Amino acid sequence: MRLKHGACTDAGMVRVSNEDAFTAEGELFVVADGMGGHNAGEIASALAVATLRSGVRSGLRDPATLRELVQQANTAIYTASLDDSAQAGMGTTVTAMAVIPGEEPRVMVANVGDSRTYIFRGGRLDPVSVDHSYVQELVNEGIITRDEARTHPRRNIVTRALGIDRTVMVDVFTQEVRTGDRLLLCSDGLVDEVSDDDIARVLGQHSDPQECAEALVMVANTNGGRDNTTVIVVDIADDISAPVEVTPDDNDTEEFVRPAPVEVPDTGKRRRISIGMTLFWSALVAILLSVIVVMGVYGRTGYFIGFTEDDRVAIWRGRAGGVLWFNPTVDTETRLTGDDLPADILRDVVTNREFGSGVAARQYLALVEQAIVNSTTTTVDGSTVGSTTTTTGD
Ligand code: MG
Image 1 (cartoon, rainbow, N blue to C red):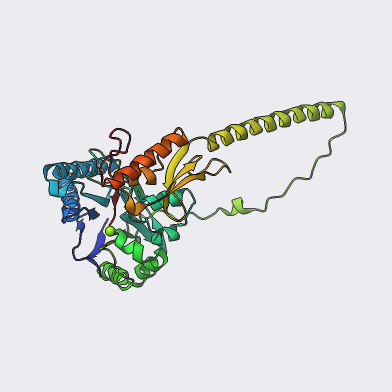
Image 2 (image 1 turned 30 degrees about the horizontal axis):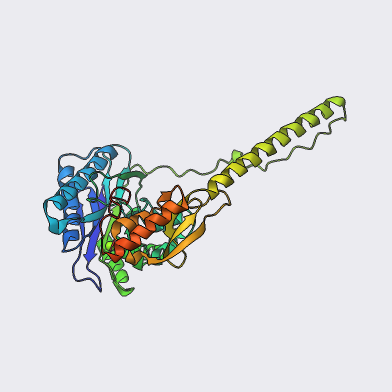
């Protein structure tokens, strides 16, 4: 398999520094988007890229090895953040793609956070990786569309990143590839500024991968360039035993002829069947009603915290995302917004922390409000407030 690639990174039109990092070397391609104060984001993303690059040199055989490498990068960043208080809390997203050695033309893609890998084939752009972000969870629950996620005020909250916790869950995908395919790795600076349709248009306009990468960064900057943008374009250049296109067999496409209805004589047997069927349907309806009642009770019990439509922190009654058609309702709305919250509390709100009773939820928020008044930014009640840190892609 022969790969041709182009890469481009840029600080953008607003930021002074570029906390993104990338590598495009041999058959490994990585984009990392760092976060953290005092340039710590730059260190985190560089550490991720360096760890992956050195790991590949000692052999990258399969998806399991790639996952291990990303976990090693997590350990490297986490350890560095403990060793130096200026780097405390630093983290990075990562999307990494490598060829799986062997006969099969496939690539493997590892992902943590909201940097992305896409495949562009026949004019169509499809995501290979799935973001770990607050807005992706809203998309999964059908609350917002993928396009609305691009402009959502909380689009920068990532729910997973390297370096934040001692361990990290890494998603690894495999993707079959064929000659003419183009893979795109990018940081959120591209996707926040440029729609998937426009990305596809640019990918289709430039045959040279380097020109294409530069053009994509230029479009992001033209649209505002509010974040660092990094793009790698990888072309599958050689004829590599491309899979045969599957076309429908003519014999399978004959028009389906509906059989004529068969008249059943009105006999005693038929009536017994009817009584049996009636009992069957009655039992089924009874079971379904019981299930609905149980689900309804379940859907209306419990409390959790989350944002209202106008972005206020609130206590909701019910289950996050709803159960059947039993949607949660706002029990108590506070004046707090996400901007008022320390990172660990924000994480609880974003992940819809649950409470056994409305009283417990109200006590929790009262403590949060008190802690904010006292400018306490770590824990509220020590043991029960989330102890992990939510990070933002900013
Ligand atoms: Mg970014």
